[in-house]
Amino acid sequence: MIDGSAKAPFANVRDAFQQNFDDELELGASFAVFVDGEILVDLTGGFVDRAKETPWTEDSIACVYSSGKAVLALLIARAVSDGLISYDAPVVDYWPAFGVNGKKDITVGALLSHQGGLCGIADEMPPQEWLNWGAITARLAAMAPLWPPGSANGYHPLTYGFLAGELLRRVTGHTPGEMIRTDFADAHGLSLYCGMKPEEMTRAAFMPKPPRAPDLGEINRYTELAFLKPWSAPASVSREDWMAAELPASNMHANARALAEIVHPFANGGKFQGEKILSLSAIDQALGERIHGDDLVLPFHLSWTAGLLRNTGGHFGPNLSAYGHAGFGGSCVVIDPQNRLSASYVMNKMSPYLVGDPRALRLIDAVYAVL
Image 1 (tube, rainbow, N blue to C red):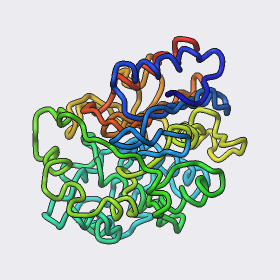
Image 2 (image 1 turned 30 degrees about the vertical axis):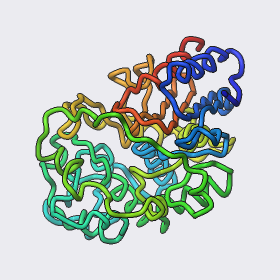
Image 3 (image 1 turned 180 degrees about the vertical axis):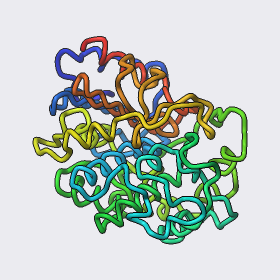
């Protein structure tokens, strides 16, 4: 059962959404498209539970994993627009304790484009410690980079949220989860959370794990620390404690409408629901390429802006001038300033694709077929 709307001329997107279910690729999902400030596609379908008894509705949310990094990019760009932070400034200007062990010259822009050499925690630690914001940020502040900062990009799967989040906390006084809740969820009704209350957890979909592990390519020390050590991710914690914690790079929960809408200012001249929250200068700085090359952690050649991927590999649709981010299991965000478009795909049946999930690409290609 597919609910929601796909306004003209996007009826074909509804057909593509239905096809994913017909091909038995989905359990439950949502997909949304904003163009020039207007939501033109807002679709939901399937089920939130294993037994297929509870339909996925407009109130249903799911973990979007690393697609939440696009939200962090928006929050940082807003701080830049407000004059609170500069991409060109050293991180130590805002976080003095960070400037030890060879990190004093790392700029905000370099840190946000995965150049800082902090892709994982080097020293063994209890995996439950990921739920302790102060403990993790202290470890990162004291840590020596794993490679010379600025020399290469290496994807930071979990640490990224604490690095960007601590910068935000220090310049605004609020964590990313607090800003999302106050400025977007409470003020504007977006179903987007990082650190959930018990009543919000009841809206979160069951997420069956992928049938196989993602292909991480040739395993090296960076890959091991980022993904494969016993302490590389939270463990021995309850699902409720994990959802209540703030892990901004990996445990944001949202529906597709909220995720597409919160990043829409990047594509829509800085406007969010009619209010300008990003300056054009901040957008230009946020979306400019900061590094490209073979990633030290992931098996891809990547081009990074300050928190978003440039669509050089076509992982976010046919417009190679677009931007995006993907999340473990298949979720994704697309940002296309050329067409003043943002889109998001959120699902609960997880796949092994690290980027470019075929279900999402089917939907995105259907959108571009009529642009």
